[in-house]
Length: 321
Image (cartoon, rainbow, N blue to C red; front, side, top):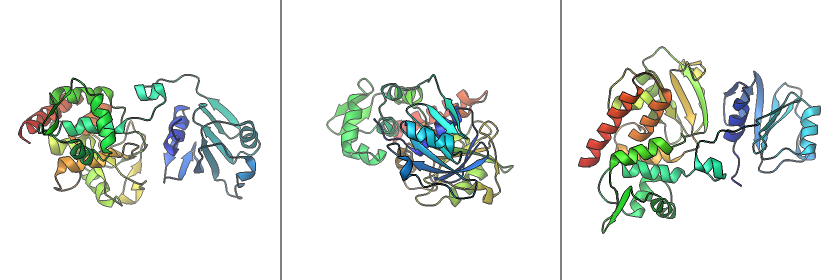
């Protein structure tokens, strides 16, 4: 059984229709109540749970399954909340909520396997250039192991060819279609923000403020630098850690009305493919296929045309690189 994450718990809670605002990796608000997240790979016993203090902060436990003792504790003490991921149960304020149906979007979800981030990254790497590359080179471009590349190549029969110099895509258009059809999105934790600044400027401000290895710019802000077509309406920025954008002048917004999405993704290959496409030049832009996926997800009457311009640019670059 795959390990659960804080993201799994947040996704379950939002699926119940409860509003969630992510502040940091461990601090969120659920239905306007402050909560501290604790992720456990097995349900904790009541004796191992330290009781909350006198403040109103909830201790929210994200666990695989709900035990009778944990249910009793959360029902008795409303400062204890539980998100039981595999059971599809959330206990909040003593009230038990359940998800009775699910709508999996990928074969990984249907089988219970982890999402094959490496395979999706391999598709993006193969779309970068028509030049054959070894498995070791492809592993370096995707940020996964050579063994993972070997397994993924076996599943791309009909899309790749092997030569004496390595592996190459047969058609960048078919690679792009396969990725955009199958990719489940970067997942992770996303917060929505709004600003009156131009969307591209918003992305730049957030990218400059991001710590660690920096941020990756996608969505309209990324596409506008790769293959400009439509007026940017929403930026997407991927970062390694949570970031409070209020100090940069942004206001909270639901995702439908956000001008910028900030995501700490489950898909960490985004950085590797962004670096491969950038060749070390300037700030990191997501690769064209991640940008295309985000544009389609953002939507709009011209989203398909904007995506087509990205793919057309990708085809031209693939021929010459």
